[in-house]
Image 1: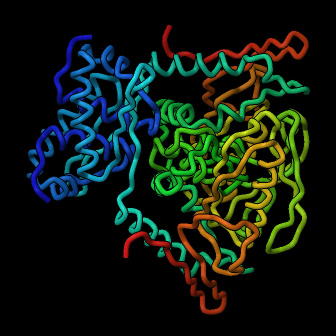
Image 2: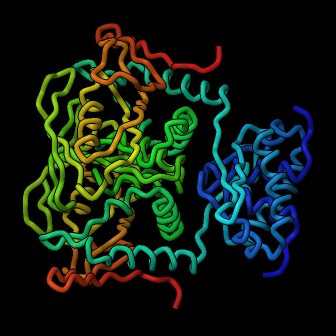
Image 3: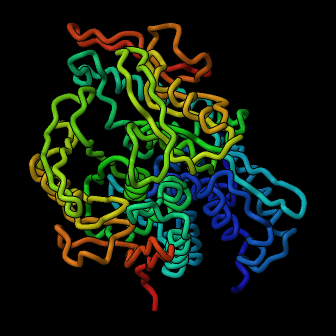
Length: 272
Length: 272
């Protein structure tokens, strides 16, 4: 391939790096792609690193050594994260979202790609210190969010099924009691999905008493994996004591008044 | 904000555009962000357009007029698409994926972000002429793929549930007969999810006889929407005549031999 100008290399490098967050690309890969020495690619990377930092678009990490390379880690600036959470809170408080029984219709937002891409990056940023190997969720509505968290980490997502499926081979099942309605339910995981010793981050769209999250913790334990953290998009303020202890919620649902149609839901902000 | 050099503008512009495929950004937005005239931003866009084209990373479309702007449309070069489909076929043919009953374990691949991001872009590219307003799928395993198709189109995903859910408000339900096992099943859609007149693209992970896809077509019709196309990652060669007529499959499953552990699955390639 003919040699390309620095401007073009920077544009192409940015696209390739940002397309696959957290993935380690070797400098040799880019060196061959562009027909330039690694030292030149290194200079291009420095330019990108500075620019991404300047605009709060992400960080570029360089890993030295033979197995080294470069990776892009998305960041969401605090004000942008807060803006997204404000927007979500505002939309979730729309009166016509209240469903008889005191539920909140959230599916349209949970299945809107650009909202979940950003939410996924926020979770990744705030929970990166847990160094998970897998993201774990339970069907159905939390899947897009959990998948976008998985994308931001460049990790596989494992989806727990309700009941047991013949098309997934032998499974481990547990019974769990939903914390709020006290019903006994079953959830299952294909035995091959999660290796023993794996570090797992649980992601879900909603938490009330925490029974479902507790079920996922137990299920992970059953196969010898360890849940190192739990993230939910919305948690209810009540009950204050959930069945799981540590969790990160981006929004807190304080109250739904079916009569006045007023929903009190507030973002958990990082800035003052 | 202080003015930034062209190199930095190009890097930041590339990241912002590529981050949200198909979304129309106004030139004023970038003009304010960088503190440069629109004519300068236009020149930057031209540089990015040429580079993306040169490396087969995507196209940049400029829309003229007051409501105009610029959008990024991802492309997957034919050889890269074929490489991905070859890889998927190769991995799906691994002997230990065969589950008693003649099923194929696909969940690990279906829940791996970078694979589904690319598959989503391939579907978008091949089905863009259908101009959908919504992507439609049914829980559970097809959700990540369908969500990545939705992301590539910048459209919302609607997920049909099996059974009816109290937390989603009033729903439209239909009974359908699975084409292969001839069981009667129910699927439902919240009434508010899909407006009448909407153009819908159905995406699923697997199609055998097409009963599930037919169910989604019927359900969409029930609310006055129109299914304009169907895309599935894997379709079986048999039965040749499915319950739906037109569909795009990226891989064809010809045979699973439980005894010899040989799976015959082939990519549908675009190049000779």
